[in-house]
Image (cartoon, rainbow, N blue to C red; front, side, top):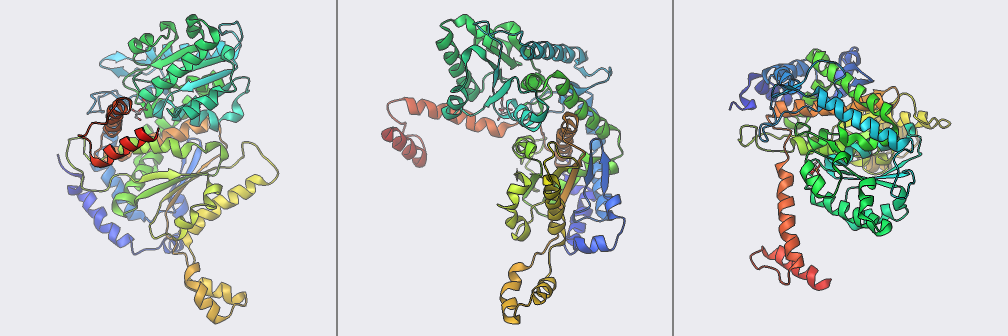
Length: 546
Ligand code: F6P
């Protein structure tokens, strides 16, 4: 395999990065009045401004050369046309087919999957309508008032993030709750106020083997049967979303209550599939479709827009630029929107499970830094917590600021205050404050020269900290669909640039296997002495302290 580092465009970027590290964004803005219009994109559903990155016209040209050298466009066609680009699992990657709104066939091994997708969507519509309109009845003939979605990772984060974000669009006749953690505290708290007669469980697990999900589903079943005194109640209160029908039926879920999933949909890209059932129940099928439409608009933008104006392509390139070439180790996601409070957690799985790897798709060790650690929080809360680190810490953390022109729930002047902070923070991170400015300001306030000497170094902000700004008109199902798809495609582009198979997750499997072995140790009388001394000591302590 030819390493990316041997590409001329990569080598030029390497040398160019050294030059750019000497530059300050303040000067780049001062020397180019067109910078904002040059380095911003009107994408479907939002404006994407990336002008506050440490980059020049030359940087962008070199990055675009790299995208061409890595054949991003060719890989994009392979993904959309159903080629098995998930090489390590030998699977196609077709979450985009789930939101394909055209009649253009999508072929997997020569078979058009559109029909299956439509069938599954019809199933979601019919079922969610029944539940929402009070036609799906529990064992005692009561309508459903509460849905508990049991699943973890990609079978949880997407639906939960979306239903939380779009809460304003629900009519709230039915509440949706989520159980993802095998810590019994969560399921106990969720079930405590619920009435078994009016509660429906959606067990979401692509594999139907994930131990945390199976444990929670078993506990939920026991809770239901203990109230109904009848195992037949399960059929009225449990549905499953899974590609493993056999395991789901063996678990006790009626075959007609199993929603199909396919191996060409990765867990972390699956909210568009039947995994989105809780979304359709909570928000209504029309809103679920609007979400799909928004994502489809982004798919079209990604496929049809030249690379230089292509938001996910530029985002992927900038991630590589900031991380691999300029040396950032982490990236922060900052939604200035209460409704998007789960977005950082969602994107953590999407990006880090996809590209947090150090082996190339040909099985060779990767010698460059791949993706940053992703973290984040609602912007305003972050300002009063970790922004100190963003402004004056000695590592640079590129930030994505996400906000809306219009508030979802306008209250007095709250939105102006929120968005003033939003714009001010991107400006402050970029500009910083020089010692000269600090001294001038303190002198004007009448501070003595000796006091100024003491405090001035602490008030200096170097600035030059990169950020992207994503500005939606308003958080709608369509806008959210488009935003999520933007990040999905960014992650895809990153993977191609880094030569990473973005669609497997072997790193997660290791812990799962070990946990099974340790569980056996916890339930046996003694602890086997072939463990390392730390694990041996901890297990013995835990068992004797129980
Ligand atoms: O966390 C690892 C993982 O395999 C994710 O990729 C996946 O989203 C999650 O577990 C849940 O898997 P399943 O849907 O098969 O229960």
